Image (cartoon, rainbow, N blue to C red; front, side, top):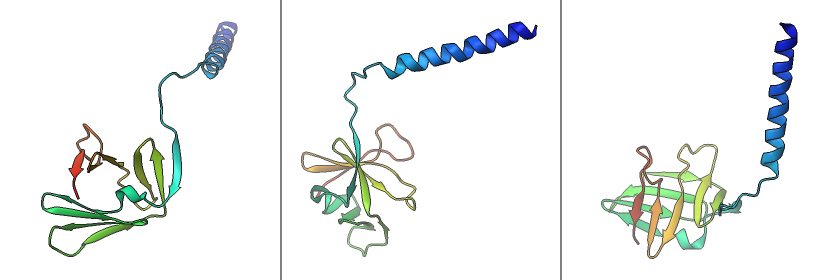
Length: 125
């Protein structure tokens, strides 16, 4: 009985090792974007963006939120953003919301498509 269990464990370990070595030599053909760390938000996103009754002001190291026509009520501070393709995500341990910002045409998009917690929103200048 011990011999059967021992041989089963060895075969599982060896099959895992073979599978791991095969996966390391596979070439990934998908166009996955490389994630890089950038200091500050890019200039293309640094504006006051409006969406209905709300406004968002993005600067190099801050993002402010407020109802339109009112003072900015809340903000976050960050030093780095993570760039993945054309999308930028704030890299902050204090910030729980890790959703991307990006520009398409004359609009800024923020959020995740199909997500109920952080839905995709469209902002204009």
